[in-house]
Length: 251
Image 1 (cartoon, rainbow, N blue to C red):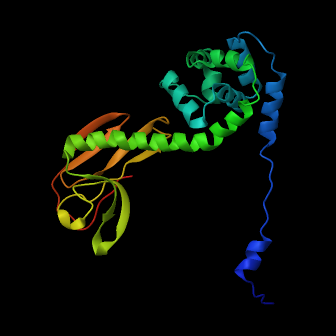
Image 2 (cartoon, helix red, strand yellow):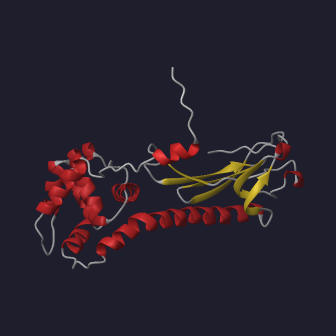
Image 3 (cartoon, helix red, strand yellow):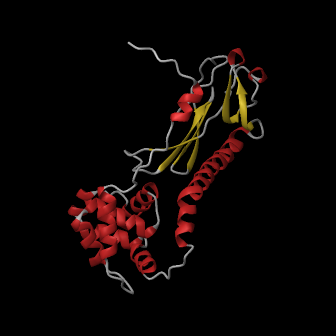
């Protein structure tokens, strides 16, 4: 086998931008459908039904585009409107009238009329690029900050002022880790018998929670703080020997 000696400068100099097309088969189909839709002063349930009957997945995607929602946001809104009913193609086929009624309840028809009759301005494309690029990152940061603020209110209720927020926790053998909240302090030596750090997580559960956001907090030696569907509960946990220098995280 021939051995080739390479320098970092040679490797970096050989790199090229990889140009790819963002459109796939689904995108092309959706664009064709949007361009073929008639402009109306108002739209009806029949218009939405035609979209979903033609191709349910593409029809739902078009509904999301009209509403300007991400997949997660649209799913959460539709779940809230549907309650215990499903939001997939089987649920639609089982009860199309109820499914369409729930889409109307979350404002789809109004959004369709507003978008179809919007007066275009040259800056619209640039504004959309701003929203999908930097705006998406800002929205994510604000959602994360909102979760932390919500968690901090619960922690204050349980621990008072005995915590430090958004700091670096120092644990066993002087190892460090970023944490949202350290109780009672970011220093391990402050109280070896209590919890050392708390991590607040926002995650999706596609099963029981039906896509809604849940929050969990780490356990202390005697108390457990949990937030489920926006409801806070403080439960008494059984006594157990503390493990010095360790913080149990429940993700």
